[in-house]
Length: 152
Ligand SMILES: CC(C)(COP(=O)(O)OP(=O)(O)OC[C@H]1O[C@@H](n2cnc3c(N)ncnc32)[C@H](O)[C@@H]1OP(=O)(O)O)[C@@H](O)C(=O)NCCC(=O)NCCS
Image 1 (cartoon, rainbow, N blue to C red):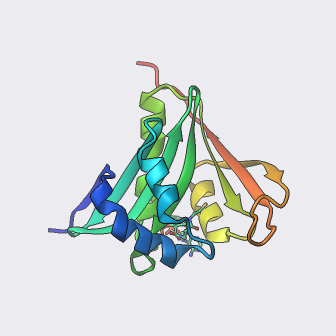
Image 2 (image 1 turned 135 degrees about the horizontal axis):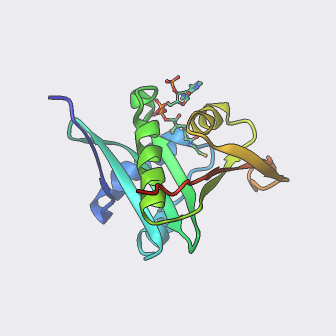
Image 3 (image 1 turned 180 degrees about the vertical axis):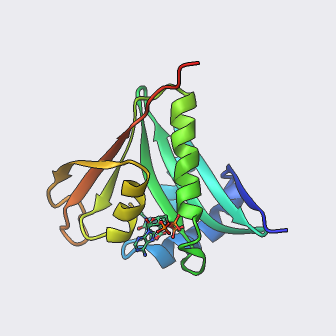
């Protein structure tokens, strides 16, 4: 049976996560950056497992009133099948159940694919950070989604 599992990331996931990272970004994070996120108690990290194989990950920093999306990637062979949307949906649910007001993130101005995903889930552009990315000098678009708390 086809099964999608979203579970908390473990240190054993690191080699496959690094592989997906390198396939996903022009300037991938190095192993030290991942280890620092994994050891940060304020970070909530998800690993996406499809048919028993790790195919994506999502890293977040949980702040007092907001959740900051740090990294989200799906292996190129598994894209456009709803996995990115599933991971982000899980983060939004986490934010809602933990009574956070916003989920926010930075995305490269030219990353239309990711921006389309975020927009489809209700994120809006709130501002631009000029020349935020040091590798290319590209601007970052800051996107945020307000989390409505469900009342019984
Ligand atoms: C961005 C990323 C995580 C999306 O993952 P994904 O699993 O392919 O996304 P989904 O299949 O869940 O797509 C959900 C929606 O996003 C949008 N979307 C996703 N890929 C798209 C594409 N190539 N072109 C246009 N829209 C796209 C669509 O609205 C899509 O909904 P639809 O398929 O019903 O039209 C993936 O492309 C990726 O890993 N990119 C490289 C890393 C990256 O840029 N991360 C974001 C950093 S801010």
